[in-house]
Image (cartoon, rainbow, N blue to C red; front, side, top):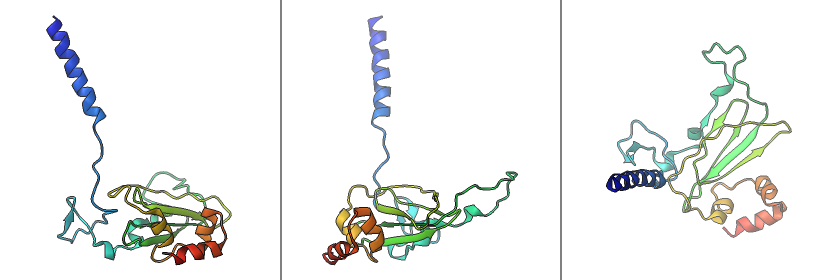
Length: 174
């Protein structure tokens, strides 16, 4: 009887350990924009060359248009404009930006420096999806102040609560 109880306890313990050690694997790059025509595969997916990726690859403008639905109200998204962007990891520190309007969606890869800046005076809603393939490898100062092209002085001055001249002095060091 004691043997059965021991085996049952061991089986339950092994099942609980299985759940405790489960995790998502770290992938090899910041993002993978699918290119179905590509023969190059990273992590099993056909990816565009990172040099060919543009902000529009992370952008979808269609949620403000009525779709094929029985919902008479359509999509209810607030008005406004949101300037968004993110910077890739070292050594490129490439900046991807876009102005989002009513119904737009932009995808931010997980772990990358990103920002959202409300251009207008009205509330704005943007949908964001996050993923990660290179977490924890970003040098924040290089990404923020040394991005190519530079993040707007207005955005950085407001985020760091300093004047634009201070931002210009810091950016000159990168």
